[in-house]
Length: 130
Image (cartoon, rainbow, N blue to C red):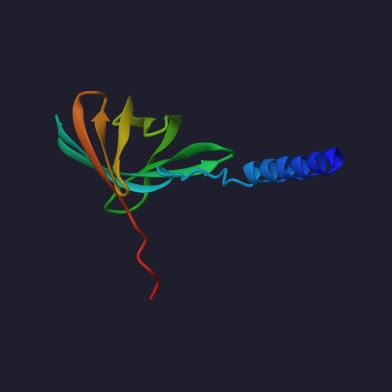
């Protein structure tokens, strides 16, 4: 009887450990994608740009693009990632600048450009091909 109890306990522990390992380890990659961002009140007026982030080798990388043409205006030099925010470093207008973005909801972010100008952003969803 003791052997049977030990066997059942062993099977139970094996199943529990397999179940724990089978949990989904992929996290939602919230900031990856294209974001339309407006930094309000800069000396040259409201600055609008596209932040294009992609995950490569476990890190976010990307570009800053012109919203009118979609062409790259600057490469992102560095991205600091936290659970609900990112800070993106790039060269804009000949200066090293950074953009802080924090998750607001599923498709919107808020933050600041250089801790001086309020920034708001919206996820750009690709329209389906026709």
